Image (cartoon, rainbow, N blue to C red; front, side, top):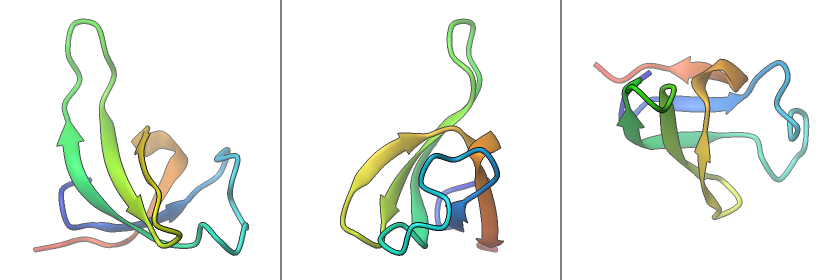
Length: 64
């Protein structure tokens, strides 16, 4: 998953199948470090910008 990818809430995501949270775009991607697992910042279709873990997202399309 990288910046520009379109995503939607995947299995295990608390907002899966909610109409206000159907699609988002990856704004930032952070690799796994010594203290944190990989995570991304998503701009969602409802205007929220949130930190998410890729394991709970499904890719709709991948940029490039």
